[in-house]
Length: 283
Image 1: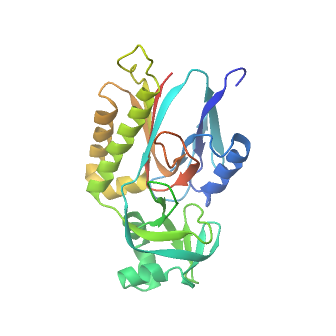
Image 2: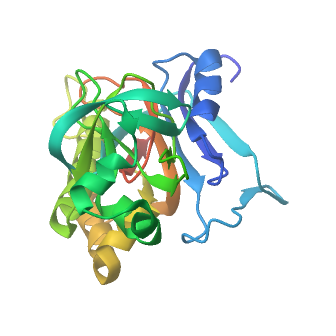
Image 3: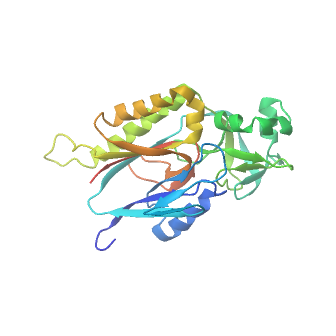
């Protein structure tokens, strides 16, 4: 970075890494827990076979690419998902990395069996749909949003394998999402990113913020699956909120990296599922 102070990190990683949280934790050991990182895990349209990363003229998998940005950089972040808590809080009583073994001292799969009145074999058949509409939400004290986790697999012992870690002792709830809440979250994320970016550009003598030059959008592939033919409405909501003339670039992901709280300050960066993350830049 030379003499310029680092302000923001961009991260692109393999979306089939079973625990994307570990990569993020490694970076935070070097950059600091409060350093904002904005990133995406590559997807392959729910095939779960292989994802690819591009760096100059190289194409590879099972890796990551990072960029540090600094200097006179003005940016804002908005992170939302739109899923709402369903039912009571429950405690993860046994867990290892991204695998929940027990919830309230019972096999983890009992959570889904209770809500859907189905046995594990039936749940496995419908898991892709169930995980999109009813992911697991981790309650984090002081945060505005639950941290979501998709369930990728159900093991024979009733354990739930998630896309991202869940610390043992976490309080969780089943979550529910709709098209309407999904679209509203996209608009809120874009509005928040824009508000923070423009606020950082005001000077005592100026009445209006300078225009945003670029917006990056990392959007969970689960949201595309939920919205279906209405997926374009999400992009239209972001464009309207961020500004009709602001160029937008992005991708559908298997996971997102972004600070969970981005009002007034950027908190700790987390590995997310099913969020839409908007980064607006002027610098």
